[in-house]
Length: 108
Image 1 (cartoon, rainbow, N blue to C red):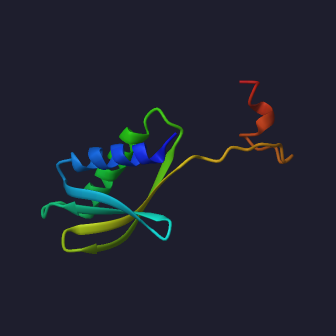
Image 2 (tube, one colour):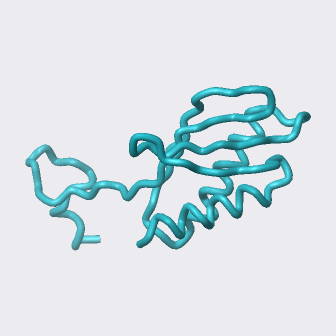
């Protein structure tokens, strides 16, 4: 799975939303930041909903999760830390009777 194609799909989907004027991403010190310019009449909640919708659409068919954290705003520009990641899977039994234990994987 190539995260660059996921990011490209995400940015294209996000830029197509009516609330968003421009969207871009940039890595700074290994941390991916999402820069979003929105129209004047929209508030931050509508932009966050558009980000969640676009990330869900771009992650469809892949075992990925995303996390979006608001960083700062300036006029009608917003900056978020946005990250796609593969969830960690347990590889051994720790003996604590966890509901997602590796021992119960084949029993379902």
